Length: 301
Image (cartoon, rainbow, N blue to C red):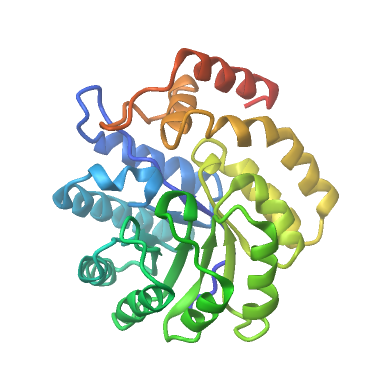
């Protein structure tokens, strides 16, 4: 089973003004991430605007990221884990997307709790059971704010007992639940990765035994987020705290008017490839722009 630890960027999808994908911008973004020392890449996730992407667009993005990752490995000898988002509220589609990721050479997949359907505990378990049969490592994505359903720790423990479950992206926002997951599941499955889904909770989660973060902010600041997490994982908490408090205003601003609208505006403001968003998302408000710009200045980004 793959061991996941560190910073994994929940990647934006750069777009042109007409809403088409900026594939060259995406290629540049991948290179920026790799040069920034990131520990892994997570395309086709929420931050990627996956609900509005066509399957042929997704296929091309996977092909590009595989190519750039191979070039990086050839040049540096460093293989970066690739975790592809394959979630759906249709279990058959989640299985199909996971099979596609496995056949493309991904190292793992990120599978969100089925949304909108609001399945029972048993339904949640059976959904992940079906996907686990594909045979590729799975990171469970728990984010009640988007799915309407929380995965309680007793259900996650059942899921963790399945084959091919590598860890969880914990975005419940409940630090007590995250601690319970560490206490009850990592003691039973030591390689089970508990990754924060909230940049602002990364440091406290690691302090309690967590493994890192699937980060939105690292789209903009991969080196800083990686340095913070590396310091925390190595027990250098004073150093990690300094970076955390430096970035704290932007941790908040990065979601001031939604995701990925806020992080894309920040990246555009700093001249990084991001571009527009697709409907139903729209550009951030003028008041949000000021919050983001002020946070960037305050954090010296």
